[in-house]
Figure 1: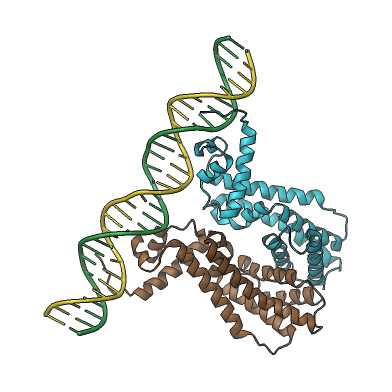
Figure 2: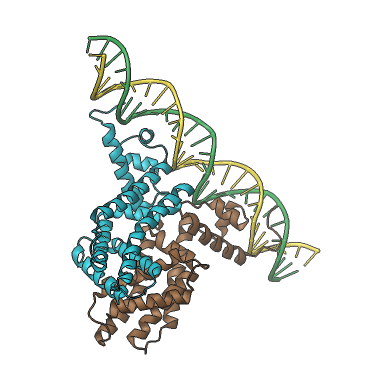
Length: 196
Length: 196
DNA sequence: TAATTAAACGAACGTTCGTTTGATTAATAG
DNA sequence: CTATTAATCAAACGAACGTTCGTTTAATTA
């Protein structure tokens, strides 16, 4: 056999990326073999290389896509005119919801930075900092407007991001709290902790 | 050549564990090869097996040691008689300081859980939950004593742990703030966020 | 000093890895 | 209907992997 009936290149590529996300999330990038990836897609190992330059390039593509998508989705949602408190609450809600819905992407982006080549890593780190700058900007505006007391913006931003991202490592769909309830708790904690 | 002059088994074992921590922190467990580990120690690959049962057992030993040490060190320090606010501040200080000082251990324990065998993983997860229970207990006592308002203890504990652990991922010794200053900022945020 | 143990070497084992290649079949275009 | 392109297979590549083992030398004990 060679080309299989009904095969479409674009579909196979999509399937490869989806399977890669699933496997890397579960076992880690280095632990995932191209043979496992191919088997998950239902294809021979060599066939993956029609859609992927190398294993490293695959990881880089996944991470880059995630970071770009994260930044774009926040920019789409952000209401520039609102007051700092509303914007902060919106950021908390967005970050938690987005990270829960794309758990695989987030786990990969946060756990596999070390597996990325030097140059690609720098690129992802830059994009991450770019996203975090949105939060720092909200905090700075709040302080300037007198809505927030003087906090260390850099530390506060790191702390907030860490606790929000952390949610997707313990959240379970059948857990005690709904996503909305979890968001509400975090909004309260963030506002109290930063706003004082 | 065979046995090298001045070689001592205990020293070699120590060197192997230290090198393993360093390499796993930098590149990840799967990415570290036994040949790299041996080279770092200055020994032949096969010689590592005099001190280590297998690569998997090495990871398990590292993680287990870390979790036990973490729990023991907190228990040593905890003042049971103090009020909830003092205990919470003490926990924040301990956690940040301990995690910064043992960055490699922490990175391994947090990033390499997936590389651990099923049974070993369960063991580490249990120990982690056991450590986190200390924080939950402090929060619960605070609520009961009326010192803290009603917060969701489970979520609050996760959030606090996440933001505290996160410090050792961005902390730099030559950074703007000292460890003490970072601790102070976090104590303030935690107390505000939880105590209200 | 002779016998024993501790520590490491060096070479090899079978396996699996990421990757390449050429043949083969399905879909598409002229 | 034929020629071309898209998509996949089957097989293989060399390299590197974790691990084992018999040997050799240093240290220790008797």
